[in-house]
Image 1 (cartoon, helix red, strand yellow):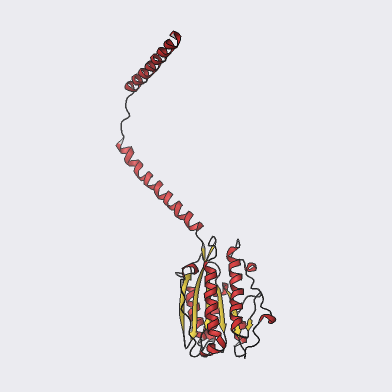
Image 2: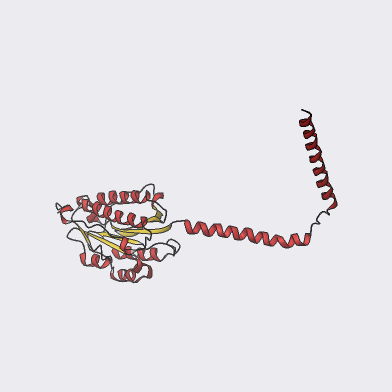
Length: 279
């Protein structure tokens, strides 16, 4: 018991001596003077470091954010589309496609949807909007003539607008669907669209509905060797066509390189799948 108490006292003395020696050394050491000039010189360096850190964070965000993939539909809404339920089928197909795009992963690509209609007049019905942000789409109405040339010009201007389609965007997709003949001076606008620097890089798809569609022009519009002109016979074929296109685009967004043309393959629509009751 005495030995334990002696050891306890020895420990207390040792700690006291050590603490006393440490305080003595601190008092003997001169306190460093603050060099105001050095501090001022260091301020810009610190600010520069903060700026560099901020820039690095911004670059990291830009690299990891998904790149836009524009999908632009040119839809015939002329009076003839009111027959045989075609305009109703087009409305349903567009809504289904946009809804499917909105659920896709945006790890690499963000699908943006644009809609140009031409019936009576041509207009940008829906500007390029991220698919997941399209909460509602108003139904299209069929009326008037077929000003397809005006639609081509709107599409060209949209593709060349670098504010709406930045240079970092993936290769756009243009989808043309019509059941008739252009009723305006379309050739010059069509040639301007095809030779446009950005339109040349776009994937162009086309569908002809019924026997009155201008198949020669629509074949020239389509530029994907894997997906030549699609021919539909009725309303149900419109939805089949858009489902096939939707499948191809969503497959493309999931690939390592969404710009790889070999990834974009539209499944064929066989004749036995078509609505042959169209008259």
